[in-house]
Image 1: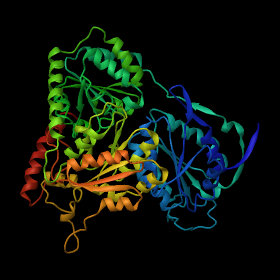
Image 2: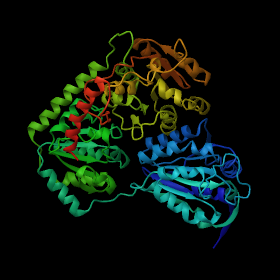
Image 3: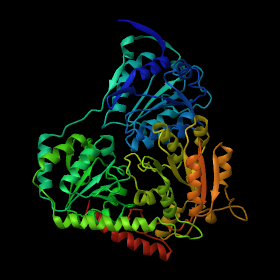
Image 4: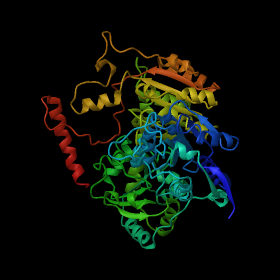
Length: 616
């Protein structure tokens, strides 16, 4: 057996370089880059190894560890999980900063390789700077925080442990079912220890998407169930994208004239103006899709977790409807008392299309879906038009940005009220044109995510829509985007606080309290007015402040012409949101309160809970 002597860190890097992926007949690096912020715990080990590999495995420097991991997540999401980025940070707070991002990747089933530096395995210099000492268990370090938000976790306390750990890490990162974040905690002393590794560990490995065919009996039962339906509705989720099943979804829906609704992750599965696309589903959904969900006798869920925003907290879908869940993960396929159809969406949709020959849904149902769809599209036109109000609402801003976007441009968002406005109102024909992190809805993802999207799709204009709250939480990767020459266009909607949660607070009967800046503890005279344009300029971007939709449209033209990142700030009405569409969301209201408004809200809540109970 031929061996090569390497440090543990060098072996990790060389192994990453050997991993390839087949994409549309081309062989590409599975790991096209590594994000790194160095400190004690990784600078001398992984840092030195990455320096030696810098010509073929680029290292990108960020300004915040959580943000760089968000950028890595957005990169892989944009590429439908075909390529992966790794992130390394120093022992202590640098690494723990990535825990939130690990949760984002975990919830969204996205691959992410995390290589946090860790404390000394020998423990000789303990306690070292930034080490968390646990009084009852010396094997714990702060990196154990990654365990519940990792699909696979290992701490490499001997260099030879890589021989068994690295293949398991790759299994999880590339598996369509188990896909998610992998954390390999790397003690700083072990990173620098050498071992004679077998050369075969570093042989080129080409990964391909594994496609699991459906069980014959489950497929036959699914076909029989669909044949009984007169009013079926498809829900397209993110799995339709990750499977590359969009053509098959189109063929299935078109062959049988089936209305198709979309989740946040599924949006873009069909072009917005496709004859079968009835729009977004759920709490932030379109009136057309939500009306059909309440009337359908069969729901065919394709590649979706059926989270509470899609299902209206289990109160939206007709309680008498049957649910058929086509999903590669059996964990998801059995939710909502569904009949499971476990398999790859691309393979299985083709099987369903062939197996249903001769079946048709009710003509009246098809006509109703078409009528509702046309009504909703007319409503979107009206809602997104500039109304000339002194303070624009989010929907008007969405309309302006959407009109400025080209056919293959991408909008990025994550949290606050904007995801609801965008899911309802954004129109795209490009399957990658809508990028929403709504599994974890992580404030602060937006700008870093936009950077990752731009790195994945450099020929697309990337529009980041972000509220003032999320902007203030995390904005430093604007500087990174300028440094790397990866231009993004950010539109900051300033409603002076957490407007979405303020509206939710009032809906639940509460007073305005601690959400809008006007309702928070502050010095006499109130909280300061942030100059977002000046701040962005200080980070190296071009920027400007606008007051009206007409000014915004002119600014967007300048932003598109810019060669570097461009930030546009606009004040918006924090009390206004789109009332059309939408569905109930289960947010618990207190049973006891001296406020009459809360008591009324509790009665309303109880009525919705009764409908929810019928779907449990």
